[in-house]
Length: 289
Picture 1 (spheres, rainbow, N blue to C red):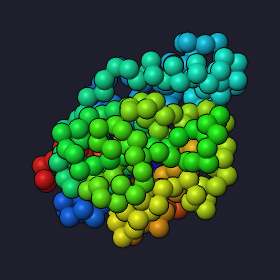
Picture 2: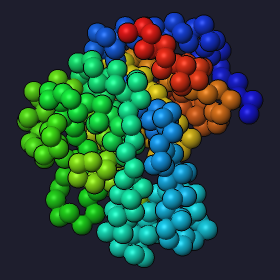
Picture 3: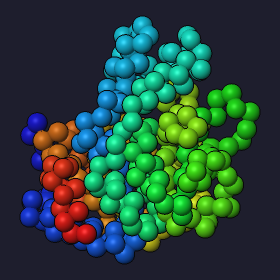
Picture 4: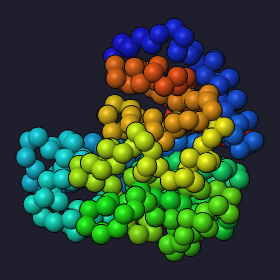
C-alpha cells in the first residue's frame, strides 16, 4: 500500500533511530510511558491469538457467527454473549489466552526499570509475567459493567494478584494499566460491544480512566509499540489514555501497512512515526539501555 504521510510527520530510518535513542533516554529517566499492543508479544510467536482479527477467528471457530460479526472481534463476542450467555464469552476468552505468552526481551527490560506506568492493551499475561519478580508494582484493569451491579469502571490488583484498594496504588513504583482487562489474575475482559457502550459514552470526559493513570501520564511522553490504529475502538483508547500527556509521542509503525485512517490519526495526535520493523526497534531500545 502506497501511503504518503505529510512531510512533517515522516521520519526516515535514520531519524527513527535517533527518536528511539531519545525514547530510551526518557525510559531510563522515567519520563516515557510504554503503550504496548499485542504486536510486541507476538514477536515470540505465542499460541494465543495476538490480533483482534485472530481473536475474532478463534471465537468464530467456537460458535457460529452471522456474517456481520465475522472478522470483528467485538461484534463476535456480542453475538456469543447475546445467544449463549456472558459466561460463555468469559470461558472462551480464558481458553484463548490459556497458553502462556512469554515476555520478550523488551518486556523484561521494561520490567527492570522503575517506570511510573506501563500501558498494555491486550489480554495476555506477558507484561505481568515480566514484572512478577518485583513486589513494588500493581495493576489496574478495565472491567465489564455488565451484570456486576456495581458503579465501577476498573479494579486494582497487587503484585500477588489480590484485589486491593485504589489508595494502595499511590505507593506502587510501577502501575501496569490494562484498559481492556486481562486474563490474569481475575479474567476481566472488555470484549463485547455491550462492554464498550458505557465506556465510549463517557471516555471523552475521562470518567473510565483511573485517576492513578491520569496522574502518572502527566508531564510524560508516550511510545506506542506493537499497536495498530486501524479500528475506531483502538484509536479512541490510544487517544484518550494518552490525553493530556506532555509529549512527544512516538509510534513504531510499518509504513506500508498503514491505512488512511491510521495516517490521519498519527497526524491529528501529533504522533511521530518511527518507520522501523518492531523487532529492530526493540533491539535498538535494548542496545541503548
